[in-house]
Length: 273
Image (tube, rainbow, N blue to C red):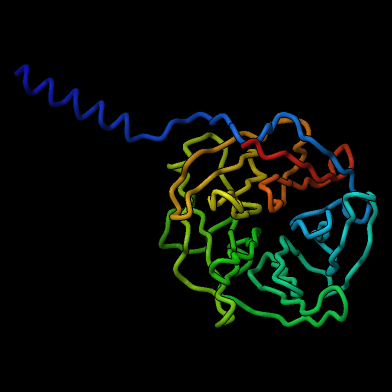
C-alpha cells in the first residue's frame, strides 16, 4: 500500500514538473520596463504595424491600411521617404532582403517590392493562407533565405483553435511550405490571455525566435528549434499596442506601437550582455 502511494505521489510530482508555469519570466537582456529611446511617429504612421531596422539608423515601416512604405530617420527624427507599392489593404508587416522589400497582407498574400528605394516594382505572391488565418508577422531569415510568416488565427479545422502557426515562404521556390516551422500552443503559454502573434524576428546573436503578441501584451522567446524558452510581459504604459518588432545588428530591440491616446511610437531597448 505504501509503495503504491509513493508511486502515485511520484507521478503527481512528475506531472507538476512537466506543466509550464503560468507566470511571466524576468527579462535579463532587456529592461522592458524602461525604453532607452522613444521616437514619436508622425500622423502618417498612426497605424504603424511592422518595422525593420535599416543601416544608418533608419527604419522602414508601413501604415496598416495604406499601400505605402515609409523610411524614417531615427537620428533626425524625420520622415525621409514615402514609397507607394500597392493599393489600399490590410497590410501587417515588412521584411527586407538587400534592395527588395516584402510586405505581408492579412490574407497571406506577400508583395515583393523590388528596388524599393529607387524604382519600385511590385510582384504579388498568393499563398494557401486566407483572411481566416489573419497573417500578421513577417521576417527575412538570412541564414535560410526564407521569409517567416506568423498567423494570428488558425483556419485549419483539424487543429486546436488555440494553436498558432509560423510558416516559411521559400524564396527560391516563391512558395509557402504547408508544414509549419513553429507551432505555438496556448497550453504551452498557459496564461489567461490568448497568445496571438502580431510580429516576429530572429535575434541576431542568440538566434532565438521572438514572437510578439499585441493581444495580452506579451513577447515569447523560442529556441531556433521551436521550443518555448521564456515569455515576457509587455504590460507597461509605453506599449500602447505593440505590433512590430525588429533587432539591430548589436542585439538592440525595437518595438513599434500603434497610436492610442498618445502618438504612435517606436521604442528602443538596449541589449544587456
